[in-house]
Image 1 (tube, rainbow, N blue to C red):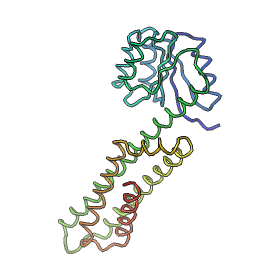
Image 2 (image 1 turned 45 degrees about the horizontal axis):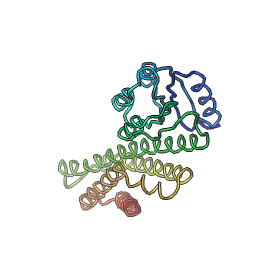
Image 3 (image 1 turned 30 degrees about the horizontal axis):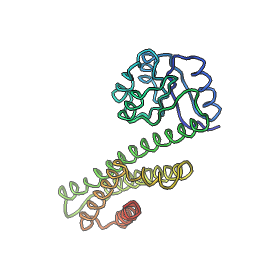
Image 4 (image 1 turned 90 degrees about the horizontal axis):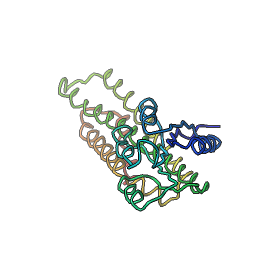
Length: 246
């Protein structure tokens, strides 16, 4: 079975933690358990997780102090809070901390698994967006280097340099497009259409779109310097991607 994601369960109730870890492993997730906030911090420092399931009343988290510290330990990690002692105060505080869910023990298993699945998909989607954004930013820097090449030798640019540049640029573009394809397939399989649209309109998507727009601008700006059908094709592909995402 393919691993769907990695989850950390932090709960001082060993029976609860191990039982739910086994349940999630049967669903295809990897799971580790921590008995308190201190142990959870150590594991978060050593490993990358896609979701944290944390008990509110475990040692080190009585006032949600562990959850408040989490962005500095594992930025962007989604959190599902669970408790056997729900209070209005912790429920309100959890919404301010932007947790993915607040559930009362004993957990309704269908709702729990649904929330886990959605949280994991969102976590993996954000990571894929970040990876694609970084690649497209690299492409933008490579495209800008065409101006430098032109200024060094405006009358006779090195075709060897251009060829190397094109190979790396097209490789990066294709890798980024594959990431986006994989992301769209994952979202289509796991999320309702309305939620997919909300995710694709998130700030990271706007930043990625802006990077594509900048790359198109540099290609357009340098088209007279390098008469290359590959560059022209690349610009058309990027414009098509931008048109579909805009």
